[in-house]
Every structure is written in C-alpha cells, then in structure tokens.
Image 1 (spheres, rainbow, N blue to C red):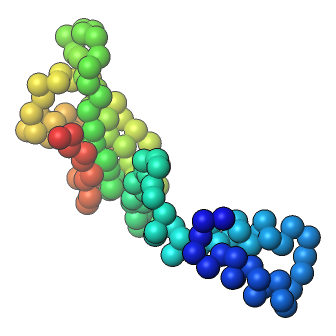
Image 2 (cartoon, rainbow, N blue to C red):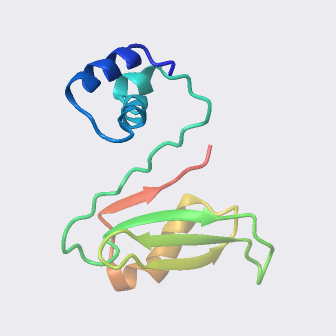
Length: 132
C-alpha cells in the first residue's frame, strides 16, 4: 500500500477483529491519519480555509460591516465601479453605491455618511479587503 506500518497494522487488527471489507476500510482509515497526511507529498494546491467573522447576538443592523469595491465595469452614467457595504450582523443585507475606481478613502467615508449613516449610524467594526 505504500504507508509505513500499514501491513503490520492490518495484521494486528485482523488478529482481534473481523468484518467484511476490513482490509479496504483499514487502508482508507490509515490514508486519512494525521501522520500520513503530514508526510504525504502534496500533488494538488490546497485552499486556505475562510475565516468566519464572529457576529454578536442581537447586534443592531449595520454595526459590523464589510466594504469592498467591484471594479473593471463598463462606464455607465459616469461610474465604473460599485462600493459594496455588507451587513455581517443581523440582516446580512447589502448596499451598493455607484462610484469610480479612482475613489479615495475620504470619498468612501462621504458615501457612507450620505447613504448609510442617516439610517444606521456608525459601525463598530469595518472589514475591508485590500487587493495587493
């Protein structure tokens, strides 16, 4: 099978236990063991697990938000990007505001102040993804 000690492990288990397809089951189990996984040569790219954003219970709407820009859009009505503001609290709602790819931090704050602040106030947590 190629795993160190696999045949010895199977032999010891078979001395005490028996079930149909036991050798195949044991081999599959050994393939998945932590030590085997750590020593195995990776032949494919592994994906990084996503971080789950913790959410407070009974949080008011838009107190924890994520902001990002959708860029690379065709020019429409003078805009070529969209600012997304997503509630990570109770609503899981989203607000989409047209803007330009040249938007600055202060301009994003102005858009937030004009379109979101009047209804929800200031957030306690802002998550923003910055591309390299």
